[in-house]
Amino acid sequence: MLQIASPAVTAGDKLVNNQARIDLLQLEQSRLAAEFAAGDQWDRDGFNTAYDWIRVNCHL
Image 1 (cartoon, rainbow, N blue to C red):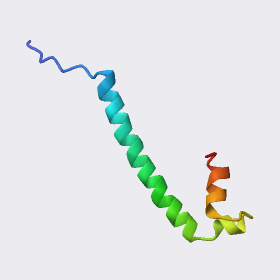
Image 2 (tube, rainbow, N blue to C red; image 1 turned 45 degrees about the horizontal axis):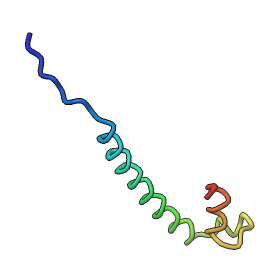
Image 3 (cartoon, rainbow, N blue to C red; image 1 turned 90 degrees about the vertical axis):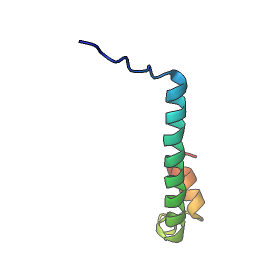
Image 4 (cartoon, one colour; image 1 turned 135 degrees about the vertical axis):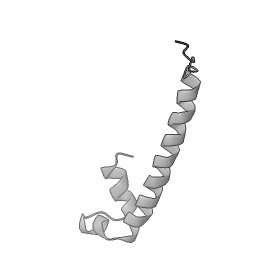
C-alpha cells in the first residue's frame, strides 16, 4: 500500500505555534486583569491596588 509521507514538524514550526498560543494567553490575561481591576476583590484582600494584588498573587 502506498503511504503519503507527512511533512515533519520542525522545531521552528513548534516555536511559531507556541508563540501564537502564548500571545492568545497573554491577551486573555490582559482582559482578565482589566476585569479584575474594575472589581473590589483586591481591596477586600487588603491590597492598595489591583496591580499590587496581581503582582503578588501572580508572581510578576
